[in-house]
Image 1: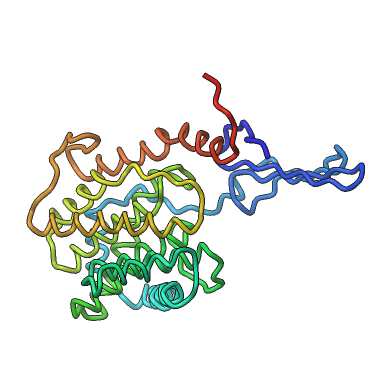
Image 2 (image 1 turned 180 degrees about the vertical axis):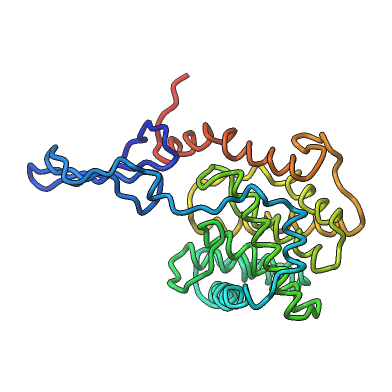
Length: 314
């Protein structure tokens, strides 16, 4: 296995052999886009237009924390209820599967056992991490994704469902919290891009923390503080592929997001220009997008080399 030197974010060439024959399949830009097939050097199929296979994207230029907040407060629940009901049903079922089945290290069960009852914060981390571990370890149960990721879909929904249930929040407010969390995740991921070495569950967990502040009737300023506090903490977690340890990254990211929520509810937030933090929340989110999209491009290549045991020459 060799690391392909390519300018594309996703580019895979698979070669198979039988006797004297060799065939190749080339995948570019999207996980299901086979762009070229050859047999014994002869091109059997070639589709040079990558863009048509990247999916139809809506224009997200109008997304901002403020507008998402306003939309979550005013959206007609009937327009989103069916999708959110599926997200609740499927993702909570995956969390239960992780806690009752035998997957990976059993991270959710370990978190619960090691802290006794542990309170709501521990339960949120345990259930969400368990759902991720089950999915990454082979469970065939479906989940509702966010930004193309099951882990992000779970990290942006399971904490909200559990928080609302524990705090006695009514169903309509729960739906609005889920709308808020999902869209805040999408807002962050839009700037980072489809593929990055920036761990996507950081974005989703950050959104969940902000949604907890939203469900607690926090002000828009306090919501911004929650996002700021989370991104000041864990925006350096790298993605080294989808695997069971993603559950641990979710637990760590949610720990940061929940702490950020508690700080914000006491009006505590890290100051602008502390490290990569900017003067307003949109500039901070844009800075994280820059970090994930451009700053980690070299990190992505280095991670691949490490995974493929490619030696680095000085």
